[in-house]
Length: 504
Ligand SMILES: [Cu+2]
Image (cartoon, rainbow, N blue to C red; front, side):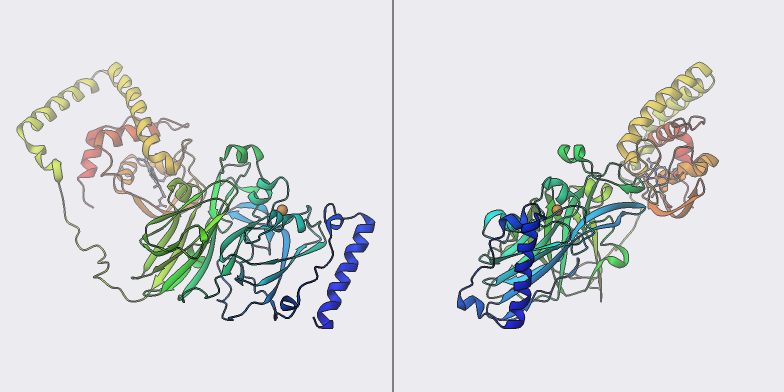
């Protein structure tokens, strides 16, 4: 070892001695064993500083063909950041990001690991790397008080993609606040070359508030114990991989994603909508390769490597295929591919023609007779106010069932919608102002900006005409117009029918 390297080590060792005598760091100094005397073949290894990257980036592939002593300097910081639009959270991080910095080493490397806990931290932290063969995966040697630094050394014996995480009590809380990341131990022969590599991890956040509830949120231990997280996200926040933060590729390129699950509790059914994984290295072991996989299961505290060639341009959506997690809790990311179309591999919509299906027989004699009778009954009911009010109540009940089966997922059971995504129906001035328009929205959907109670939404509601009968549309709107403080007349199926057949 050359003297310039030795000096800081000596200073650090002396520092430990001072700390020990002051009794400052809880578990650290009492456990300090002193620097290990490394055998000459290790001492003589070339020394490298590990390149660390924040997600979704991955350090460059390792090109050397020999072992090295790799120095990793990882800093723990407690930082306030965005969990969702308008929602803030104090994340506990490795390197300032969730997941923490990506570490890339090679099988056989000897890693000199420094865990530095920033002086502004409120708590001690440590690190358990699943790539370590040894007590606690490093946790017992890395317990570090705020403003302190710990060092331990390990040799990377097993190649693979491994999770690391904090193992300080209460462990689920430290992980639940974002303390996890990935370390890749490349096999000696390296990994096959690809065009792009990305780093994505899934984790849950157990906030005291509901999904989307604005303001600063804190960790809710009771929800964590029940495994009821309001948020399940990729890379530490809702929308961390969408819009201009989406992953990118060119059509024809091979993409590799290093995917891990920090948890602390839930497993992930990883799927990319519109792609098939040409290769999966299941469970992060890099020796076994599975081919042509649609969805791969990644356990909590586990990882997988997935690869696919992006064949045609488009937006590919990365989800946990337990889909309410994706569409209601945040576990959704995107990969945008540009480049020339290949209409043989994927044609796009080729034809849109009218298809009547069973409605085509609606003109048969029996159906006509039934319709006449229904019209008679309806006329009868209309002329009898007592029956009319009873039918309205029945309609509200039936409408509630339709609402709870369909609309609630977006507009929420309390009719208040979700900030910025789904407009409210409760006391919506826009809804109540125009009954025909309300029918048309349910039938035909709605796109583009819409202002409800002074707030503008610019999203898309899918048309429901294929899913609902005229009567169901009338019922659900009667429910919506007579719930959550809304007041209005009942709707009837004829009004809906008239608008359904209108092409505008
Ligand atoms: Cu911690």
